[in-house]
Each structure stands twice: as C-alpha cells, then as structure tokens.
Image (cartoon, rainbow, N blue to C red; front, side, top):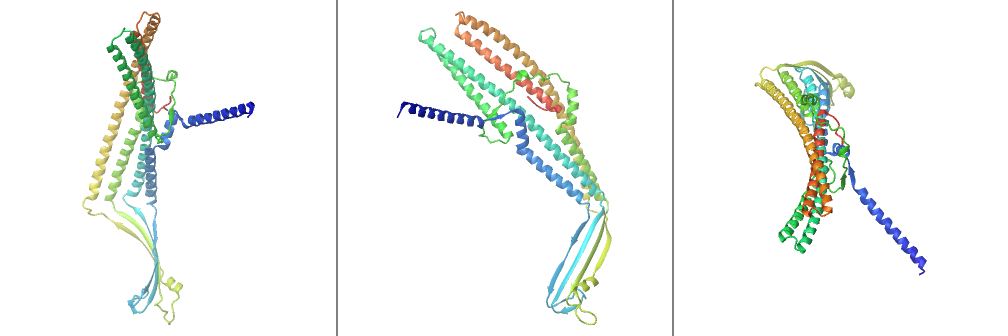
Length: 455
C-alpha cells in the first residue's frame, strides 16, 4: 500500500477516534444535570409527593364543598314498576281478589326539598368552605416548609463540597510532610516516631476525606429525595459566589419581624382557619335543637290488564294511565322532643373542640414568636462569627506569607511551614463555613418575612 494512502487511512482513523471521544465526553457532560437553587425549589414544588397528596386533599374538600351546596337543592326520584302475577292475587286497579294472570304497570315521581333544618344546611356549606381553606393553608404550609428544607439542604451541599476540598488539601499537605519526613528519616535527621506521626497524619487526612465525601453524597441524596429525582441521576449543584451577595441583612427588629410573620405564616394561618371551622361546627350542632320542615310532592299512575270497561272490553293502556293519574303535595314537620341528649352532647363537644382550637392557635403564635426571636439572635451570632473568622483568616494568611518567605531561604523548618499552611487552610474553610451560615441565617429571616429565597 502506498505511503500516502496509509497516511490518509491513519488520519481518518484518528479523526473517527477523536469524534467518538468527543461524543462520549459530550454525552457524559449532558448526562450531568446542573441544579441551581431555584431549579431545586421548582422541581420540589412540582414533583414532591407530599405536596401532591395535599393537593388531592384539596380536591376532595372542593367536592365536599360543592356537595354541601347541592344538598340545598330539591331531590327528585322516579319509581317505575312492572309485574306479572299468577294465581289468586289482588288486582292493583280494583283492589279485588282475582284468580288469574295479571300484568301490572305502575310508576310514580316524587320530589322533596328542605325548607328549614335549623340552619344546618347553610352552616354546613360555610364549614366546608372553611375546611377547603384549611386544606389550602395546609398545602401552603407544606410548600413553605419544603422550600426552607431545600434551601437548608442546598447550603449543606455547598458546605460539604468545601469540606471535601479542604480534606483533599490536607491530604496534599500530609503527603508533602510524609515525603519530607521519610527523606529526613533516611538521612538520620528524624526519628522513627516522627515518621510514624507523619504517616498517622496522612491516614487521618484520608479518613477525613472519606467522611466528608460521605456527608456530601448523603446531602445530595436528600436533595434528590425532596425533588423526587432518581437517586442514580448524576447532578451538579451550582455554587454561587457568596462574596457577591450584597443583600445579606444582619440587623432585624424582633417585634417587626414577628408582626409581619404573624400575618403570613402558614402555621398560624392554618391554626386560625381550623379555629374558624370549629366555631362553625357549634352552629351546625345547635341546629339539631330545631324542627325540620320538608316540602314534598308526588305524581303517579298504574295499569292492569285485568281491569275492563263498564260495558265490557279491554281497558286501553294510556286511557287507564290517564284515569289512574294521581298527585299529592304536603309539608312534613319533624320536631325533636327527646333524642337521648345527643344534640346537647354534640354541642358541648363542638364547644370543647373550639376551645382546644383556640389553644392550638395560641401555641402556633407562641412557637412562631420563639422561632423568630431565635432566628434574629442566630443571624446576629452568625455575623459575629463571620467577622471573627475573617480576622482569623487574615491573620493566618499574613503569618503564612512571612513563614513561607523564611522557609524559602531555610530559616524555618518544614514542620513549622506545614503547621502554618494547615492553620491557613483551616481558617479559610472556617471562613467559608461562616459565610454560608450567615447567608443561611439571613435567608431564614427572609422566609419568615415572606420574601423570595434566592442565592
């Protein structure tokens, strides 16, 4: 084969190989899904099964509310009937005993409507509307709780990612220290104990990396569970630049935050709506003390082939139905005289449930007050912690710069250099953690104020 042809074939093979490699890399890159905080929140609200169950409860309450309104409408029913009698039986048209086969047809239509029922029907409509609001408030509460959980988990992932990075840095430092210790031991400048300590430090660093990676994997798994995502899906959590966040507020007035939160917090709103529902229950229970009035009416007719005309001959079907047509209208009144105290018991239980609901509302407000005050204290403490870690980092950075310069000219030994570098890495990691904690504490306040949570 000519050399030029061989070169062309080789070039073609290389090109194909490059295309295949590029395709594989591209597919791998596409397989990894980038998750931002907003996307994590959106996927959770869209896919989370707990939210879906809450929406199903809303749908059921909607149907109950509609049905309670329908219950105020008249009810209409029809009862057609056809029969064949043999032997001695009563002629349905004449009510006389006959001994023959009789074909009979009858039918009636009846209707009734409640005119008064102690206000129970109307109060039931009101209660079912309130119960629908309860389920809506519960759905809002679940959504808000999940949003806060997603934000917490997201920041936990970011923190664990930095833990992994710091652990890898410590491994690199420990490897350098072990290499130097090995060389010093080989030339007799260090003891076996010094070498063993360097090995132990490397093992500890590797263990720290294992633990950090495990925590990272676990936090990612929990986030996937919130989003109802396949646990095997490869995702990458977007890391925002915390240093660019300029809207991190740290000074809040507890009473001002609490006043705002009381008007929008789903837990408090849910408790108040339930309290309103139990108040309505008292009115429904009291309705049992009153009489009920029902307006009713009916119309019907019948046919029997045993019936004949006065002059003899068959009685035509439609003529007989017309002659037998009957109607009725009336009022039915039911007056409760003694019902074994069931009405009184129902009212008393409704009142107890209402008082208990009032206590639950107060508990929700008290709990929110404690949480708000704690959240304000936490954001203040996080700010102080951040300022402290920032000063520590700056001091360690300045110290390391000096030691590094002296180490390069042989005025500082490797142990002091590694110690200073470790202190710098540790303080840098603590600074990053403090930044995330400050951001998180501030976002918690935003959550209680009803502000959108963004990074």
